[in-house]
Image 1 (cartoon, rainbow, N blue to C red):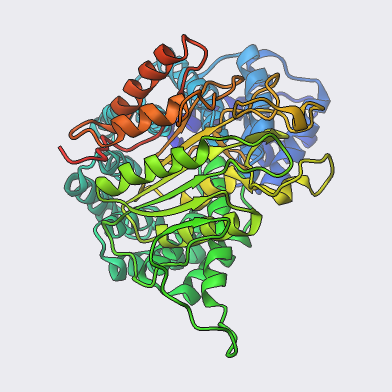
Image 2: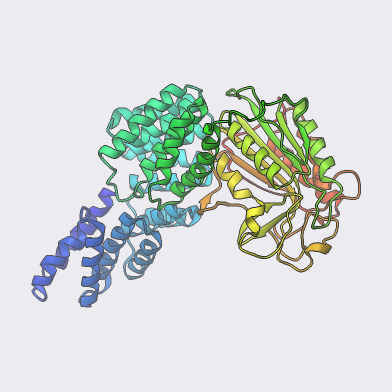
Length: 568
């Protein structure tokens, strides 16, 4: 960004040369147009200059640009976009397009960001900063090959671009090239040992490799550096580096079983104000995992009965007992729930059969399965929390749910069998928030697969009690596609989420012993050598055929490479 600011600085120098308003300009100009000015002073000075109504065209565009820089420092990306849009209207430039594209990136709007970076590059000349920023947006979309190509272009133009080496390493890690990733991130650390970001990313690589002590050491050093010298690059969202450092070290502590230190780091993550999409996603994860590790640290009362070993993981109406055996790296863990015996809405005959069939298929291919049938609220909460806690030390975590599901205010919920759906402030507290499950699993070093054979409907409709034999509570309205995690962050890297039907449609319970979706899923789940997204494509084709186009399964993926549930 620094080189792009130079051109704007040259224009700025000419703004204050005219004699009129000389005294006011001499005071306001440097405050508005110096990138080291504190953001509130910068914005105030730019506001006063705009209010003078002296400048037009390119000169006024420059003022709007610098005010946008001030908003960017504060993490107010909507105002960055508003000011840069006005600057582009007055006089397009590479710097302005780059700044607006970066604001869209920080909001998680990657396609719009890429379009702005494309426009910046069209204005020429080739610029390493813009290539780098576009690479970040491609990486955000999960197109790692294009991201690497843009980082390559930056490194060619700027061979000492620390962040391009770092981010190229992140993209290589996403493609499974851990050696290449480690080489790039080590090079970034050599280029600038004072930067915390490369150390944070190396923390993730150590966690993938199971070297948790190294992960914790790198995370600790990154946090020290971020506190000692907070990043001042205007393109770095405020506090985002420190939040990232805490969450990565917390995940390493938790994977090691050091819940006390993990709890402290999750609390530190949540104590910081987040402004960008990535930081909000980290905090959504920290909130869930803090609750889990706090439970793990709560002592069992002395007069509590000793745990009794349970013979089978399947339970009816109650949650499975937590496993006494620690989960080891590389383990594949699944949570399977089938709810059909509803007390207050129309019962569904098939979810129990569906859950048993899917659980059997998963065990056949090596998953450790926690299975729950017709769970009430307390049991469903317990089995979900136990699963999320154990998932911290797994390589693959899979969730399958069959039963009723609803949307309330844009968030999706799974329905325990004892819930009575009534309008009111506390209604959602009686259900299981799907966003909470997704946030608890959001971790790039693990593969997460979430499969829901549930409806997408509005529980507030009068037809609730008379719902038919489909998995929709009321078939007229649909559930929102789950592309966000509570606070607005994008679906976490390494996650695939699949639904039995498309948004706005109902998932049929079926006329046989299983639903159309679960029957197809059980048949294809254990196919050797079938990549998971290819497997879901086969399931989709079978469901469309068997339901005569009434039901079309839907999925969204941010998986990092190919995933095979059954060995090749």
